[in-house]
Image 1: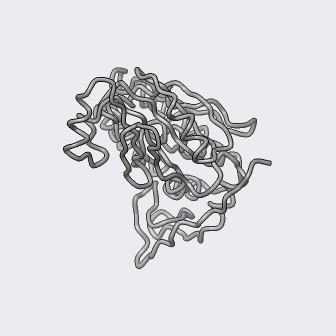
Image 2: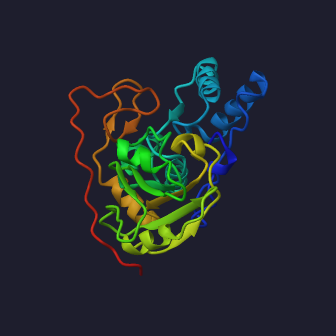
Image 3: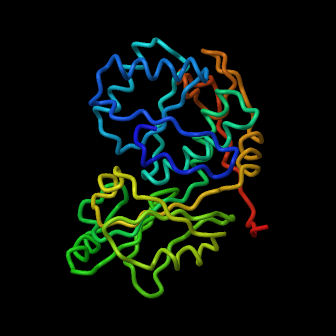
Length: 280
């Protein structure tokens, strides 16, 4: 991770700790290079997970470090999720890191698990929101004092004005919900968790990058996700593995996360459907 507030607490005793590459754009290059090299030597392979709202100087520094190390054991993964969803996905990979998965399969599992993350937010304004299509009427309503909007950015864009009876389409399988509150007060998310029949609702600090991603600091970000390690492991291991024709690592999906090579003639399967589950 590139930010400490994206390193969520361990889900269980098996969850691997997160390594945080802090202040990459402000620290001396040699210091950051030494840290990343040490991580690579310690673990063999490193997957750096960051959001699309990560400052560009940080992203450029990551590519510079990878190039200077001339290492194909460092992968940079920027999923198309809001920051809280990225933090959840990174924790899922930390859970799976305790299992008998090869580095290539673990790294490429992130792209698979993204399909099962439902991420959104309650916003005090959509005037600067560019991640989800916003109509002119919603833009106009966002200037009305007290207006709030509920948005799902992934897996499919949705936007409604928060009002009695307002609803959002959620997952069709059992999940937990994580909530991170910014400069906004609303009880609407708790009702959404019940409507989505979440097993439970947990809270986390709002990532610093969330305000930029959503276009406002008046935000309550939420994310519905799979928490059970056995379910995550079954999803990943049920997908056919292939050897990357470039670097030789075993991978799943249509691209190797480490070298970015795409298998010739590969046709990705549809994401596996999950049945509705009730908590044990």
